[in-house]
Image (cartoon, rainbow, N blue to C red; front, side):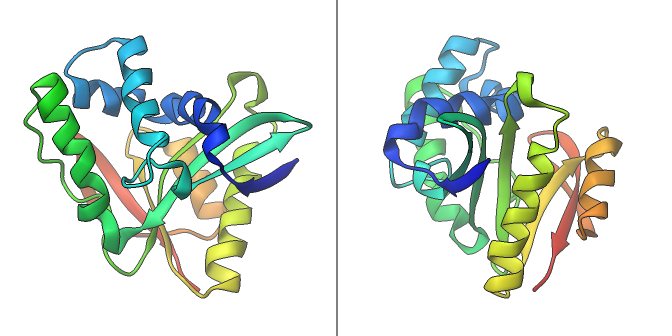
Length: 185
């Protein structure tokens, strides 16, 4: 398996994988439970350079020539600027007036979403990607990595703690209670 920076050509695959992790959030952005529209909404942003979901902020995991996972990571200091186009589009295209809580902040690179192909889940791919990100951001570049974990997902929290993440607080994101975890360089 190879983990590499994503390219524009990976946009469809990135969208498919990130949607696995954040479909419920995208439904809140578009105001309805419509998988096709959620996919189109996210793909619109993955293909662009100016927002939090951009392919420029993604890494992909390939097995052979097939993308089996994608992860979205960006500098928390840029959240407001990166989120702006998403909020504006949701308002203009879907009449959604949203003001989501800040899920990250300056001082951390934020793992926004990580999605693994359903046929590949349970094979340690998510762990491999997280270890890669820890090596890339924390070990090599002495940065802090952060993420939110749903309080109703103790298995994910257990994995993150095993990898060295530590609780640093609680957050609410679009009505969901989350725990904020970080790992420092």
